[in-house]
Length: 497
Image (cartoon, rainbow, N blue to C red):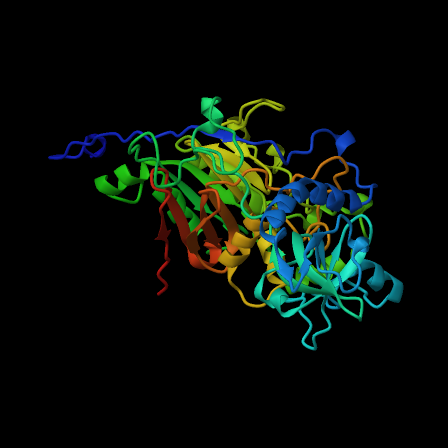
C-alpha cells in the first residue's frame, strides 16, 4: 500500500511548475537609521516649513500660469509672498499650508489641562462639527489667515495640504476665496527608469510612457496584495489563512490554477497582519488587580500566539514566494509614522530569509516600513497600511476612499494630517512624506472594501489606485497583472454548517 501511494498518478503526466520571479527594488526612504536619529525631543513645526518650502516653487509656477492675467474689473491679481502681506480689498493670490480648526479634533494639551479623562477618550468617526463651527485657515512662516467662500466646499482639503488661493480680504478680515490650485501629480518616472539609468529626467511634459505603452512584451508576471490578515491565534481564526497559504503554494487547485498561481511573483502584505486579541473577563479582572511590573511589562499577560502563527504562515510561503511585509496600526512596532519594520526576532522561522543588517539589497523576505515605496518589474509602487487615508476620512464628508487617495497624490503629500492628528516622527532636516515622484501603482490597506480606478495627470501621468479590503473580514486578495496593471479579486470563503 505504501509503495502505491508513493507512485506518480496513473495516466497523467505531472509537470512541475516554476514560479516566475520579477525584478524588485525596495526604497529605504522611510527607515530611521540608528538610535541617535530617533530623537523625539524636537518640535514638529519644522516639518510644515520643509513641506511648504518643497512644494511652493512648483505650486507657484502652476498658479502664475493661470492667474497672472486674471482680473476683475480693472484690477489684476497680484502675488503676495507672505500671508501677512495681504491687504483688504486687494485682488491677490497666496500660497500656504491649510489648517483645519475643528473643535472635535483630539487635543492632548486641552485634555490634560482640563483633567477630564481618566483614560483616553474613544476615537471619533468624524471630526466634522454638526453646527458649522469648523474653520479653515491658510498659514506660512509669517502668520495665519482665515479662508471663506463657497469654492472651498467643492474641493477636498485637510490640515497639512499645501495650496494656492486667489481672492481678496473682506471687511471681517477673512480671505474670500475665488479659486484654488493644488500642486497636482508629481513627475512620473518611466517604467524601468531606475534600471536603465539613462532615462529622461525632464520635468513637465517629457517623453514618459503611459501605462498603455508598456515595454517588454507579455511576461505573465503578477503580484498579490493583501491586507488585514488579523491573525489572533484563536480557534477558527486561521481557516481562511490556511486557504490563502495553500492557494499561494498551489496546493488547492488543478493544473490550470497551479499554472496561474505560479505567475504570482511576489506577495505584498499591507498592514495589520496581527489582530486584536480578545481578553476574557476573568483574565481582564486579573490584569487590573496586578500591580504594574517593572518597565510596565507583565510576561504572564503576553500572548505569543498571534506572532507565532504569523511566523508559521510566512515561513511556509517563503520557500516558494518572496514577500514584502508592511506593518500596520495593530502590528507590534512603532505607532508613529513612518512605522519601522517588524523586528526579525519576532519572526524566528522567517528571519532566515531576510537580508543581513544594513545590507544594500533587500532579502527574499523584505520586512519594510509603512509607508513603503519600491519598484517591481520596473513599475513604481507606493503604499501604506491605511492610517493616512483613515485619518483623512475623519476630516471630510462622505466615504469615497478613492477620492481621498487621489487627493493625496494631487496634494503630493503621503500623510498630510501628520503630525496634527496622525502620529509621526518629528523630522527636523527633511519631510519624507512629500511625494517627489508619482507612482504607477498606489495601494492602501485596511479599507472597507476593494475599489480601484486610474487617474491621469497634466503631464501624461497615469496611476492605478487600489483600495485593499481587510482579509479577515472579506477573505479577499488582489492579484495585479504586471503587464497590464489590471487587478482581479480572489475571494476565500469558509462554509459554515
